[in-house]
Length: 205
Image 1 (cartoon, rainbow, N blue to C red):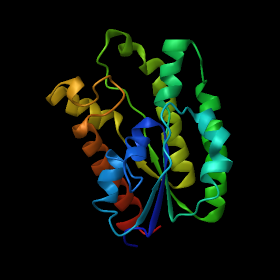
Image 2 (spheres, rainbow, N blue to C red):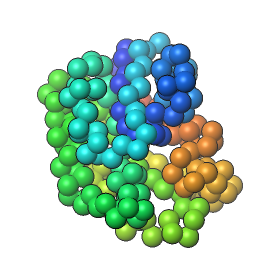
Image 3 (cartoon, helix red, strand yellow):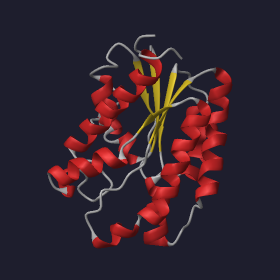
Image 4 (cartoon, one colour):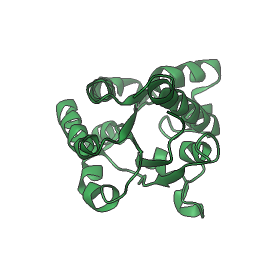
């Protein structure tokens, strides 16, 4: 199985990243890097919306995403669910997060769509972010669990982002701990393509 003919990206601002200013609609983040790189022959659609949590995605899923069609659906969500706990006291329990993920993905599984799930991450740059792991960790576990259960490609980001931050500086990876720099987006794009090919190209689906 070669590169897909069509890929639909859904998620928050990390996915959205400049798509409204880009005539192609891809943006200049990891989606744009993939669309102009290994997915250059594919139809790429970016539906990312800044600030989205898993429930926000669910609220617009039937309107913005389900009507579309693609060979591959890529979903990257979770860090805002953690962020809102610490800046607004709005908690999304990990079990609830996982249940919504499964509801979002169920129609695509039924269609036979290949799935790519991207692990949410934080690269702490502020002392307050050091404690985010207590909330984000269980959500990362949920993403990994859903990926295994649904046969999705999993894009691990927490460890690679931390390693890059250790080699350079955290702010050179994600300026505010959440939103990637150019180097951070390049890492995500490379990790995405490696995960996709390992799951769906190197190994038969």
